[in-house]
Structure formats: C-alpha cells, structure tokens
Length: 148
Image 1 (tube, rainbow, N blue to C red):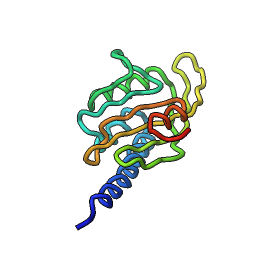
Image 2: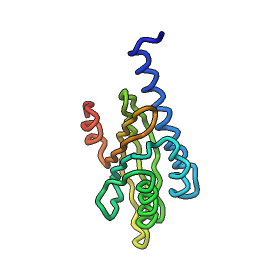
Image 3: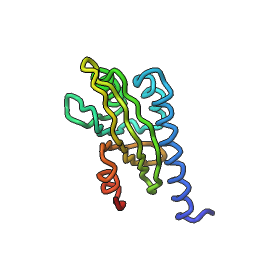
Image 4: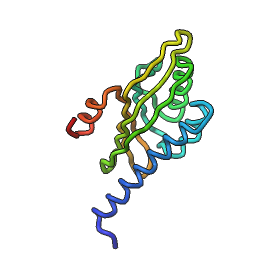
C-alpha cells in the first residue's frame, strides 16, 4: 500500500500534467471555443473561472461548462487575437500555478496587449474546480502563498 504522502505527491504531479494538457488543448485549436470544448474533459461541471482579462455580464467569475463557453465568447468579442504562452508550472499539491505571458489585439481598437499572466488552478479528484487569473506574477505568487 502506498503511503498517503506519496499518493498526494503523485496526485499533485498528475494535476500539473492535467493543467499542462488543458492549456495545450486551449492553445492547439483554431479558436477559443474549440479549445474550451476540448479542455472540458479536465474541468469539474461546477468549475469557476475568474478571468484576469475578460469579465462577463455578471462580473469576472464564469461558472460551469456554460460559463467557460461564455468566457470563450466574451474573449472572442473583446479580442481579435488572444494567445497565452505558459512558461512555468509549479506544483502546489492540490493547486498548480502557471506563470506565462499573454498576447492579444483588441477587436475594433487594434490595440496590442502584452502582459505577464498567471493562473492559480485548484483541483479536486483530478479535475479543475477553480482557476483564478492574474496579470501580475507577484500577486499570483502571493495568492499561492509563495514568496514573490
């Protein structure tokens, strides 16, 4: 029998791989809507996404699969181009911190956007239950309980 500590470590490594795979699916599709549909297999039906860039009609939290679909639609409406480039994934037991960069171009305005971005993702039972976006790595590190 595997000790509980080793089981937790194995699960946290699996969470990192799930997080990486979900980002790959999002980024490997012609549009965000297709990426979201592909990545839903890794999300809990009650998932919550708090976006750093796009906020919906009810604020910045998107809830459930339909919420993720709404985030993709809102992102598409706001941006002509929106691309996240993950640079690092940190294993935090039942959470994963992704640090990266986001690039975009506003729809209509044509204004270019380039910024640091981070997502602190929480897992339960091998599925994403919550993801919070940050446009400042120090804020993300602080939220994760890590030194900036």
